[in-house]
Length: 343
Length: 154
Image 1: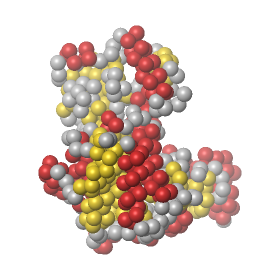
Image 2: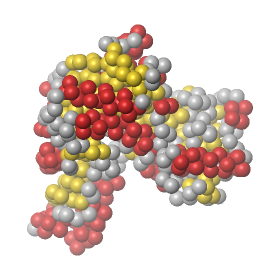
Image 3: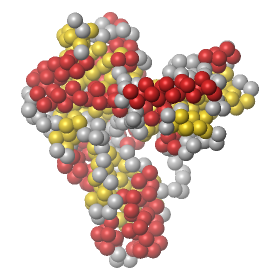
Image 4: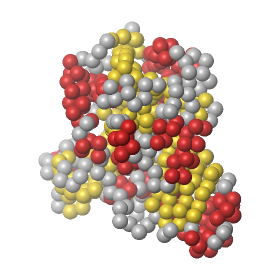
């Protein structure tokens, strides 16, 4: 007999509880509860920020108008849009059960997901960037974190993805970046239309086998965990928690400003400005795809600059823009700002 | 970037002018009477993966040895930075909070994390590795163990 793998299906949860329930499980596992695999589906759409991300990355005015709660989780990753067409899973283990290296720990926690997809005929792979993909499309978002002495990885089965809304809830300073982000979202974030119950069964089997644990279905949380849920309900709706950790920033700096949005590993957009020069571009595996530039002194050379940049390696834009004089230099600074902020 | 006075041990830079916490790979360097600077060694950073964010408790926060004083994010994995000392946060390194990669490029120099006053028992520092020979032995053994387990590249 192996150690137990507690399996809890929380079913439909409110946006807040779809976060606080599994965070409470992590505190429980840290206090000695068994390794736990849990599932939940948000009953209503909302937006969730990763632990380190800025609240300003979300268009909070739009979310307010639409009645979309904005929450913050204790694990990593960017701001994401969640709704009832996504089934979320969380695997939580005592930290001591995982390898010392984080990349290895992540691999250990993600590989069973790939196995579960494969069991259902989905040709998913865990790529070199740690993304679960079919072809070039990410089919499962994930984030991980250590909460006290437990490690938790959460991810999702994307049965249907609202690319438009997932892009609309993000804040952009340049509308063209929103359009480019939506285009990449449609291309690089995919749906998997399989029976969610079968997915839960396959996930339970693959985690039990992968971690050498025995499945113990349970219907709910332990007393300690229920108390933690109540405390987390309060914490996660507090202004201080939503504001996030204190981080120095470049407010007031005369330097270039860049807004970077990651779509999947190796795929991102950015918008950057520097002294009147404006850049919006899409990056796919280190190369510029869609590029839009603007500078008052380009004097009819805008299209030529955009053509020269399209397909160029991001690291080489300084050379490409060297023939465009002062506006080229300003644009190069804006590109460099984006490069240094790359996700 | 290798700090002045650094040596290479098992393929990683290591400096021997400071103390190390053996489990968490944190270093502690005296900055004056009961004031220290804290950072993470090159091997600890290697096992963390490519850093994307570092955040710290603000100045004035009490530190307890073995408890978190901040968080590190790499590959969408957030985990605690564990304090090697008991005391109070005096300063945080804004440069690494803006550019986490600085901690990887210069772990023993400009990539320091926080400065702290030591409010605990002085004997606490005695729990840290301080003799060059023991530091090199520990670091070598850790690197070897991580390689055998596939945690770091051969």
